[in-house]
Image (cartoon, rainbow, N blue to C red; front, side, top):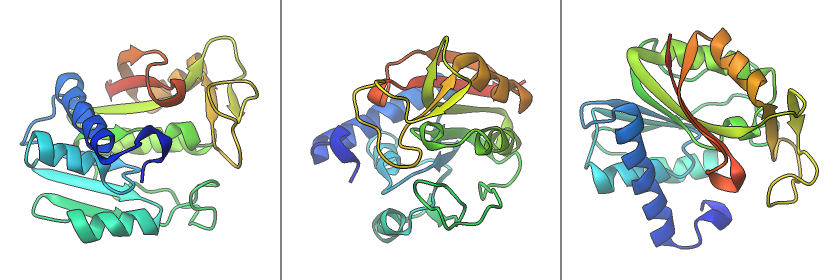
Length: 214
């Protein structure tokens, strides 16, 4: 589980623990926080939380893929840890899902929102809609850590751009790339602001954003 970036169990766990540490540093994650893991897969981040913090007030992992989500539900559900399958449409991971967008999160309920490699597989219609849902879900002082492909001097949005990054992109939404200004316009329109930006250091050259409510 996790693809080529997690070649063994140690790498899988180490990257998760490192991301939890960054959530502490960048987003103020503590054992008293509510943490929302969007696109949680098999629960990599949940394992990192257990290793580094033990637990948080509420870890909520959400995904559209029943196979990997089912594994997390069966093996990682515990007091403070829950997982939800949402049947929403994504052309790559759940093409037959519902067109009605949802995060399955109550308004104002999330202290720390984590979305690693989610916007890197999302079209340019869903992106601004989900940005607004993130803004609604965040608590007044909440922060969101998200990654995506952004560049200067490129079209506003492209699917599987040729000769870009380390991989040969195949299939729907394998890589979605935004012009940086265009992505940040979506952030701004949702009522969010950029708290931190790190260019190109994440998986396959994605960039990292930390967002907060304006």
